[in-house]
Structure formats: C-alpha cells, structure tokens
Image 1 (cartoon, rainbow, N blue to C red):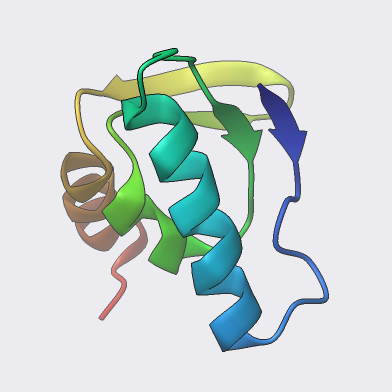
Image 2: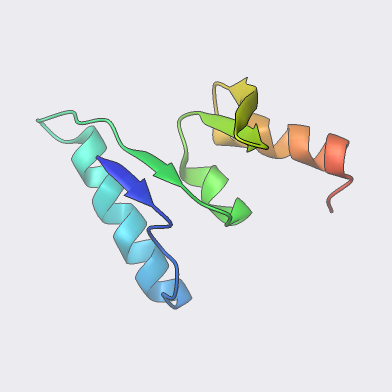
Amino acid sequence: MLLDELTTFLDPGDQAAVLECVRAAVDGPGRVTALWVTHRLEELGRADGASLMEAGRVVKTTRSGEEMMRHLRREWKLA
C-alpha cells in the first residue's frame, strides 16, 4: 500500500483506528507492505522503519520508527 498523508484531517481517535487497520493488513495473512508519507512525528512509534527526506532526497534511513525519533531529537533538538 502506498499512502500519502493518510491521517490528515482526522481526529486522534480516527488516526489511531486507521493506523490499526494498516498494521492489521501488514501483519495479516497477506503480509502486505505499507509505505506512507507523513508529517506527524507521533506516527513513528508505529513504524517498522523510517526514512527522512529533505529537499527531495533521502538523508537518513532507520530500522525502526523509534530510532528515527531518537535521531530527530538529537539533530533537531526536539523534546
């Protein structure tokens, strides 16, 4: 699945429900891959991997969403 800004304009409850559906598809018997574009950093906690793009280029790829969040906290001085 290729998903672009999947949770834009959704309230937090609906965001969580949509991401749970994607996770169910990824983990289900069909074992599909989901790739989504987002600006919501809180979604990184649900990611199996992440890539950071700047100016149209991939500048960092990690093996987990948590690893990417640690990178962003260090590099961007996020809380």
